[in-house]
Length: 223
Image 1 (cartoon, helix red, strand yellow):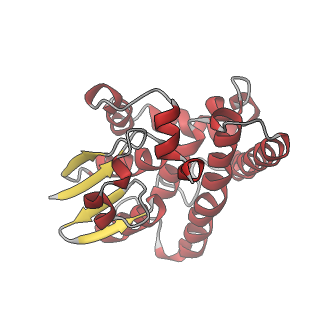
Image 2: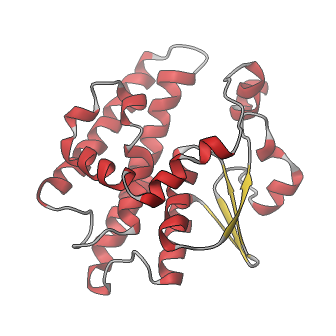
Image 3: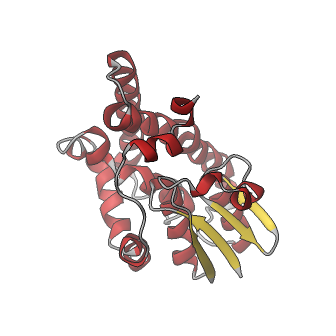
């Protein structure tokens, strides 16, 4: 059975969404990154990069949420846009992979978790997170889904981070991106997404971002 190494952060959540949507049997393996599980030798043997998510598909190891989504979509043939749209599919998938995710993640770090206030970093990453959401919102202005006419793994990729907009940018931010929020709301109402969101009730992870958690999450602080 497929093993799914995860926590409740945006990147593992979008993989969990695909697994649930596709009806794939999997064994969840929680990795508590604030407790330092990602640095354990057994986990590093699975992903030398020490991050979640990872899947072990009967010995086929795939890490990075974007790689996993593409791998599962191509393997199963589910939630995969038609071949004639492959260029659009890869472009928008990588837009999320290289833009939305990294810049939004850095905005979260500098706005919420950095041990010191760095105004330039906050300004830059907030701007880029807003800019990338704006691009997504424009894309969705005249279409229901990111690519083609059907719900796909690219929409799941967007959902992972876009559903966190209020946390990332503040409570008034979602209203600035109505088309993105429409997609997020539609996906969040799906039974598979409800199952993913309920994982917080099935698994316990450390909540406090205390000094110990920072040492595990931000190893450069211990250097």
